[in-house]
Length: 169
Image (tube, rainbow, N blue to C red; front, side, top):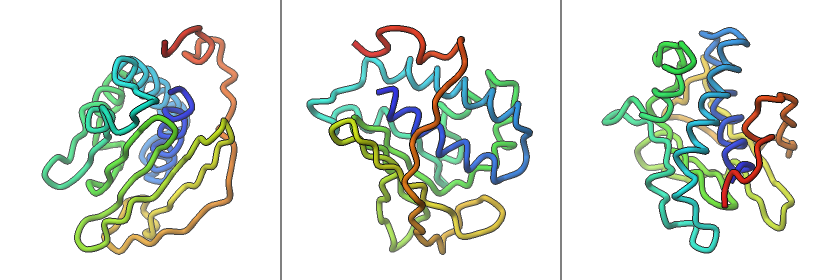
């Protein structure tokens, strides 16, 4: 669970950084709060033997009909950041599932789901789909550009939740 959450948080914070509305400390605080909230929220809704179970509960959803995701809103609030300063577009849906993190951008005819990270046999494959516009917002004319495979950054924070035993049991 921690690898999947880390991949989701890294990807979301990359989008937040691209918006340019927050400084590094604010983004880091947001990432820490988002990680802790996701771990707490997902721990009783994580089914490695049946990844689809609980998928809607673990979904991060930003769309025109629901422009504010409660998990992101809570993390922003706890980090002392205004939600709108995250600069996230309202056209992304992200699924954080056992062994895979995926997302769908935009709306309309192209409803392609893009894999952000896949964890098969403990060998991570990570791709960061990028928005096509320069302002960090995901536009309806989004195009997929695969990024080089990169390892998830190692956390060097003694207060990190990843240093605490038994996150998911």
